[in-house]
Image 1 (cartoon, rainbow, N blue to C red):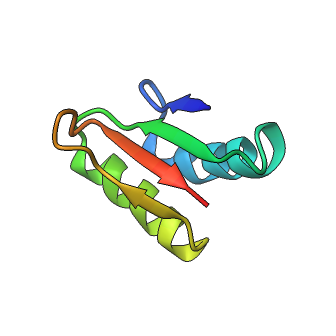
Image 2: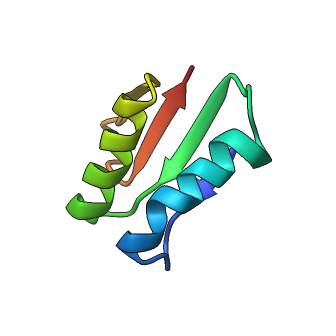
Length: 70
């Protein structure tokens, strides 16, 4: 499943992550979160992922996405 955060305000990201991971697509094996090049957006997403104990990595071929697994 893929979540594209382009166009979202930083203040709305936490709500979007909660809805996507817990309501729209719970229990998927892998997620892709598209953050674009915004360091602030990446930091918000990474903090949320760590808080909820998800495993993740940013692939070297595309620094604008975060691959996530449970």
